[in-house]
Length: 145
Image 1 (cartoon, rainbow, N blue to C red):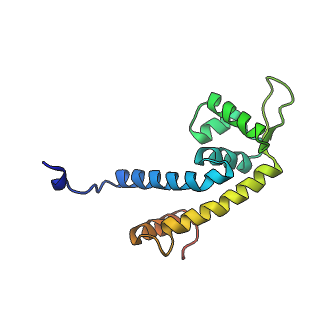
Image 2: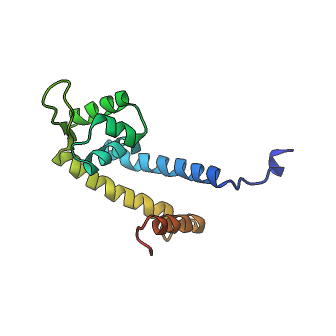
Image 3: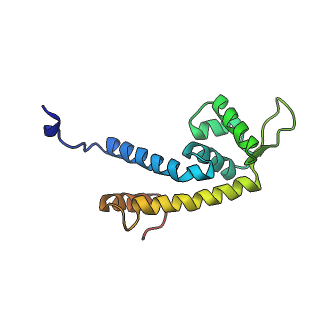
């Protein structure tokens, strides 16, 4: 069977995965001027959403290892975006977003809204508009554009 005779992919899993990769690529490009990636933004968002969160909890929320979270948080601390209120080595961490981290999160929300509009808004492909609307409806977001 030649490539021309292969039917289009209709697996929802493959379609969603393909769309997710496109969204991630678009978001990473749009977040780059803020010195953020989707991964770094996710970690910062988890920290903002759960003030005082532990490294173990961050690893669970991020779907990664505690060691990876330690490295990523250290980079966020160096950048002045979070601080770790650990009293001493060996004690539980209390990681929190700094005012600069909060400012960056707000700027990222604006960038995300622009990407959302470009990928799922009124000028987007009609199928992607439907996907965006279905996601907003399913997860309790806005219901009309």
